[in-house]
Each structure stands twice: as C-alpha cells, then as structure tokens.
Image (cartoon, rainbow, N blue to C red):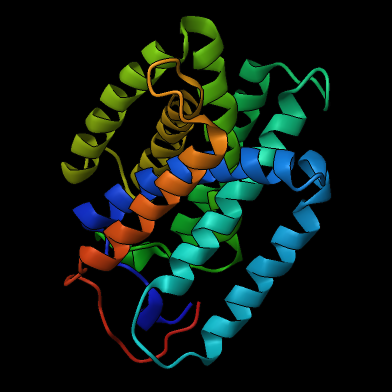
Length: 247
C-alpha cells in the first residue's frame, strides 16, 4: 500500500484494531448466517472485495487510511468464517482448537520471521511492517488464530470470564509493546494476535449475553458504528502523509 494510506502505530491504531476485531467477529457470524452462503460460500466474495480494495488503493492519491481499514475488516470477516469451519464439528473439519491454535501460532511466527528478514531497517520502529503479501497473509492467520483461541477460552471458562481475562491480557500485551519487550516485528504480531483473540471473546459476549440481549444483527451494527466513529473522530496526527511507496 502507499504510505499515504497507512496508519501510524499510535493508541488510535490499537484501539481501532481491537474494535475491528470485535466488529469482524460479529460481521463474520452475521455474514455467514444471514447471507445464506454458509462458512465457505461467502469467502470468494470477500476475496474479490479485498482484491478490489487493494487495487483501488493504488490509484487513490488522497491521504487517508480508509483503504487499510477496509482491508482489515474484510480479512477479519473471512478469518472468522475460516476459523469456524476449521474448528466446527458439525459444519466443518472439527480440528481440535488447541491443535489448530498451535499450528496458526507457528505460522504467524514464521511469517513474522520472514517479515523481519525483509524489513530489518525498521525492525525497532513503531511503524507498520511492509504491507505486501506476507503482511496480509499474517494478518489473516492472526484473525483465524484469534477466533479459534478466543472460542477455546469461551468454551473453557465461559464468555463473560473469557472477555474479562483476555481484556486484561491485551492490556499487558500493549504495555509490553510500548516497552519493546520483544524484538519487532514479533512483538507487533503477538499484540495483533492478542487483540484478535480478545476481540473474539468480546464480540461473542456482546452479541450473546443475557444482560444486554441485543442479538447478533444489532451488535454487528453497533460495533461497526463505533469502529467507524473512532476512525473518523479520532484523527491520526502521527500518520505520515508521504509520497507513494507501494509495498
């Protein structure tokens, strides 16, 4: 993507990533169930939308990060469906959630290592890794991991407890990120995976709990509205409005 379309890694970025994880969880479930396409039937449409957004971004000369976040939401929606298909015993492959999570964890680590080899110059900077094919595959893997691992915690300790516990873990992960507790980009991807996992637990709890009783459609609309409002109202002054630097 062009540098003019990339957000800076600021508190706004991590707030948006977390909200995108919640919205993507709700959107993935809503899309699969309400469209009638099922867990896999809608993936070609999402792929076409992602490609269209990625190509259109190349021709946009304005400075904003809308294309980046559009790609994030599309991937997160698809990741939810892929994860549910892989782990579901009724509608999918029935892969054990811990085994599935472990395999995805290794994949994300390998992609982070690959990214570090190609991007050594900015390894310690609080900037996005290069947003090429490896980046988006890793983002998809992190989304699938977050859904599977989040669901594992929900089944193990309950949705409410999982949402609270994982929110605390995300706070610790963000503290570790800002203190450079691990070499980048490993720390970046570890924080992304944690945000995805937390977003799954929060999204499911908000849509399904007996306190709010708002249901999936309303929760999807609400989480999407809050996500968009954050991006619009919280201006990212740290973003670099640079000349095209496609990656």
